[in-house]
Amino acid sequence: MDDNLSAAWKEWFRANGTQLLLFARTQTRSAADAQDVLQDAMLRLWKSYSTKNNNSWEPPPLPLAYTALRHAAIDQVRKNTRRMRREQSSEYLVSDNDPAGDWFGTAKLEAKERATALQTAIEELPGNFRDVLVLKIWGELTFAEIADALAIPANTAASRYRYALEALRKILKPNSL
Amino acid sequence: MDHEADNFESSLRAFSPAKVPDALQSRILEIADNNPEKGLPAATGAGNIRKFHFLSPLAAAAAILIAATGVFFAVLNNIETIPSAKPDGMVMLPEKAPFVPVHAENIFEGVHDEGLFLTDDKVPVQGVRYQFSDSFKWRNPQDGSVIEMTIPSERFFLLPVQTD
Image (cartoon, each protein chain N blue to C red):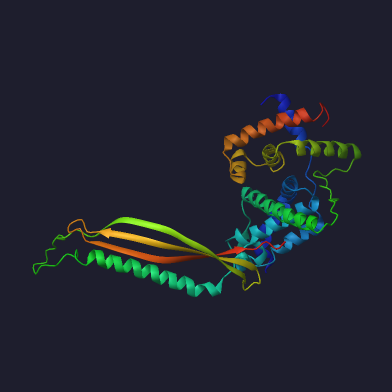
């Protein structure tokens, strides 16, 4: 297909891919799963929601992309559950050695330690708090967009964000960031 | 939000999400090289629809039976209530009241295991046939005449068999 037709879509992914991958990582248990979920969600979006405008394929709105990620992650969990049940019934020894991977990109060792502490703290948050926090801070969505992405009222998104920040501050030691 | 909270938010924003691995980025950008108008591939949903071609005749027969029953009673109700047109074009009101339904009952008769079937996609399914008899009763409130009807019916279900 002509590159010009999909240029806007590709540019959209280059601009938002890191945030989308971070959200995928918060929805899955391993780096490999997160990558699968991101790829699956992007494939679905490309096939189903790309709109042709001025002879080029326009990317989907960001809240829709996060919704697609959540759905793909749910499907992934179902697949993994079936796989684990099958492997356990076959008496295979299964150990999940695939780590979650680093959520944040850092080069310096000290920064890496702080990033790991932050990742661990975010993982400890309840899922509904974590989703809103990640979408607000790193996804840079408004509360209205978060409400669209998570199918919740905007007021709920705002209150969850406030609770998530409070909880995160309690989990993290003072001045640890 | 207070100053301390603003600082905390800023310190969180200072962490950048890890970049997308090059291999994954390439795979995803390649997706956009295909024409989206060709529809979803089988793995993403559209291919999950299974067509049970061998059920088509059964479904057609059921549809014809239902339609014929409906037409029969529609005609029965209307046969004496169709307004007769007068020569001057005036429409007269019906002289007799139509039959009104007074009783309907769905009786479960039994269930039969029809064994295993394989779909066109070689997916094993368990066939279960439920048998009912549906009874209906209509009464003409004017002359007290009654119409009763009992129709045997079957519902055939194909249940997926867990194989993993």
